[in-house]
Image 1 (cartoon, rainbow, N blue to C red):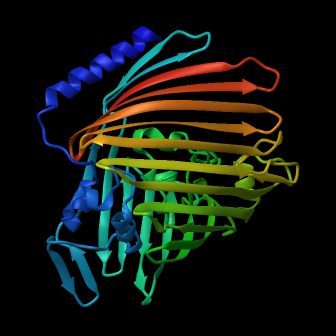
Image 2 (cartoon, rainbow, N blue to C red):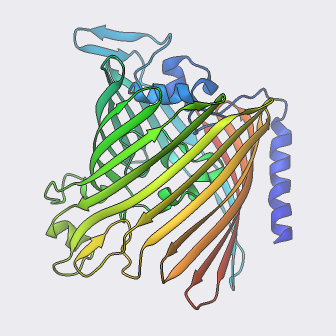
Image 3 (tube, helix red, strand yellow):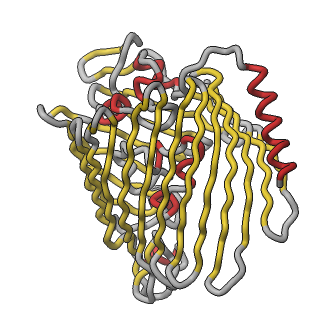
Length: 404
């Protein structure tokens, strides 16, 4: 293991040294930067994808804000003169060692083959899409001004979780990816069986709070071909975001509880005869982002739980009948220099009475340009069945990400 870590570290040092003379700030999605003309750190705290207060405002405004980019406008028409697209180029080099197995070393050039399409398509409407040959993630945002607050109706089918209709927290989901942070998050790890979650969200927001009510189902059954009976589970989300002593803080919760799908969707998921589909999950999350002197610091934590399935009901957030699925995580990132971020954290996920997965990780990120970063991340994961022997997996990841 020592040799593996030193090899990965040496690779990172060589790569960083080759570009160390380049000026840096923070990575961002160029599609949105082109539309707004805003500096990257206007929207992102510390680095992409965590959100600062202006970034939350941009999202609440439905991705519609523009800067100097020309618009094509007419009655009932207001679109950018150019389609804003970002191409993701992401080589990865990974070393994995599990208990009782040989070291696996892999290279993926590139790990992501994705186009990010985002921005305004109307005065009050915008979109964010990840296209990898299919529309893997899609968020259609609609935002309207009601004086003291904004509100809207959003449609989504994403891998970012059941709250993706309008999520502004950097603890989990879309905005928690810095140094693989969302891999620790309990709310992210307790996901719907099919991977994606989709539906429609009705929301209201102002500078200090975001509240949404969504009707959701598993994204597998939003393909236009599968009979899902239009039965969607209700999901509620509240996130408070006050400023405390100059720090940008947030605390909130989310709850999903209800039936979804019909006999056709139940059969497609392998449910037992007569077993209904449900989506039941609860989580709380908190964050604090600010500065001590010239050093930026971000701290993030969450706790989540999903009821066990039973003979009458299959919970898509926890197909196991052994017991509740529960977990927690906490992590922190520090930016001591303008182009270096270091961080670490720990998390646990367990099925009560069955098994437990514990993990911790550390990492560092070097920002070459605003849209080009190099990260080195080490993760240790222990899986322990009840009364069984723990299996340990140690993963070292060198991730190079450029957004064009």
